[in-house]
Amino acid sequence: MSLHYAEAVRRGTLAAAETRLLEFRIPAAGRIKRVELYCEAANGSGDAIFDVNVGATVATLTTIFTDQTQRVRILAGQTSGIKDTIDYAVTRGQLCTIDLDTVPAGGITTPLYLILGIDDGAATPDGLISIATFVTTLYSGAFARDPTGLELSTAETALQTKCASSGAEFLAEARSRASVLFASAEYTARARTDSQFVADLYAAFLNRVADPSGHAGWLADTIADGRPATAARFATSDEFRFRVGRVCLSAIERADAASFRGRALSATAPTDGQGYVYHAASNLFLPTTPAAGGGGSDATSIGGRVVSTTQPRHGDALVFVESPAPANVTWASLTNAALDANNRQTKTDGANDWTAGATSTETFPSATAKYVEFRLGVNAVCGLGPGATTTTREEIAHYFWRTGDGSLCHIKEGASFLPGAEHYA
Image (cartoon, rainbow, N blue to C red; front, side, top):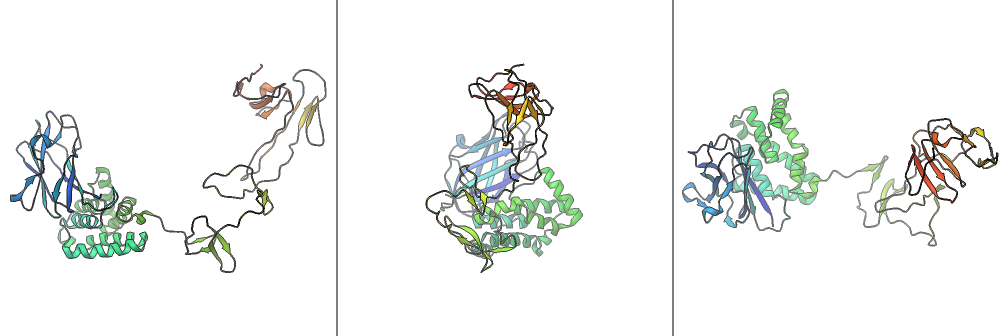
């Protein structure tokens, strides 16, 4: 099912005496499945009740609702009314109107928006826009009319061809077709003000009414830089690109990379399981299937670099991270302790208390992987802190304590972070 959303807006106060509020043309043949009405501020006292009518001319209009209970209502104090139990056949180009059947006291003083959801029966995913609807929106926004049969078929053919070729070509074609309308003699003949010009850009490129702050900003840009510059910015905006992507999905993709580190990437797309490997003979990165591992055993190093034992996850890659070789710290202020050949401290005073230790002040090299490794015997602590203590563990801000039974406790600023850990003052 492909849903086309026909949008219309009525501004100004809706007085009690008014009946006909909006008129526009159906953009695509199909069946009306949904009607949505919105006003920008909460409706006043009493319900607002609306009729939606369709016909070839004003004289042949027929309400799409079978009785009054089906009509769309915006309840008192609410901002919207939605009816999605409709199934009414329409043809492209039919006149559609909305009438105010019952108006609340004081009328509706904020803009009123109408949206029709039309199912054209095509096998297009929900949320996508047909090329015909896209082109019709461009003409309606720029010229306040639908494209002629020839204009529509010419644009459809060109856009379909570009979409089949590549998303980038489709996006360029869509930008060009939208921009050329605003540079045409027909648009110039409409003699639109700068403010109206900005509103027309919103309608054609984005298929929506401008928000006040956005309109003010674009109007200021138009006055400062001229209309062609503003139209070009609409054409290259992300909002327009994503709208184009709803017509041709590949158009929302960014352009493919053509090279890596000065070496060209092959135009051949990789298949499942392949990656790009640089081949000196052709000076290209070519799609290549990795060779099978040797002997069924894991490699412990690649190119002389140690491979981490951490298990990879989906999407991970092997990346070399430059890091200096492990080095012993330099212990200072040894108290009741001696160092062996492995830079390991051994308590020497025999006392059964916290009477031995040492400190070390180290600086990590910049832009490298960093870690500290401790090896603890029982009844010992190690950690990091700003002080210069040698035997007082309470002055170590963040430390690990291996207790007499071999348990490991984590202490941070006096608080225990592992079950059963205790801190002694």
